[in-house]
Length: 235
Image (cartoon, rainbow, N blue to C red; front, side, top):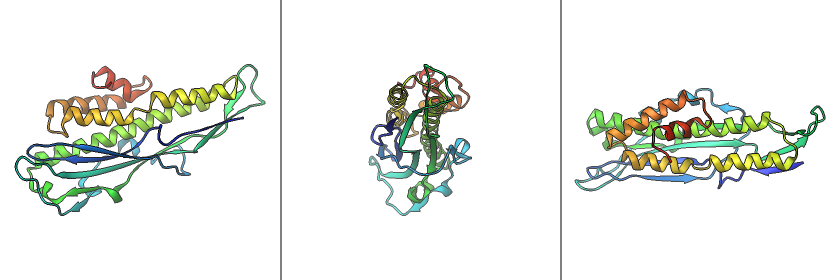
């Protein structure tokens, strides 16, 4: 038997996004460690089609930015949970050599919109409706990237779970390869912000919106990265 620990610092990351908006806007990202739960499969059931609304955010009374300055406008928190922490490979007596080792556990991925930590500055609602809509759409993109990244991870784990290996070490190597390939979720989020300038670059925002919609109907693994690469957006 060989056990492989999914290391929080190296896997797909929780996304905590602060969107800055002003006359001269900037933006930033924060990331926290993975958390682990006992839930199963790819959950919740509405994760794939979850649409953000301002009602998901707590309104905070904050000073509006003056001309030429920036201020934090909204905070979105998406938590991606992987379970179990340790994945084992053992010989299955019902399989014929040479590939007799199977993953023991059923891997699970859970996407959670952590609304208790999400907020939007009250001054955002004094801006034109088009700006409010653009900001919310940009935040939706961050959620979609986190969710589809989690989907890529889930698909990789299920593929390995359904396969068989000659040794436990070979199964562990497959997990390490998947983790290496899919560990750039942070880089995707940063590229998204850089390209779109926090929604203010309308052309780039539209390009990312289109690529993310395409990723949902892309069946070449991994879908998110395939769609972004085909669109020339990442890497």
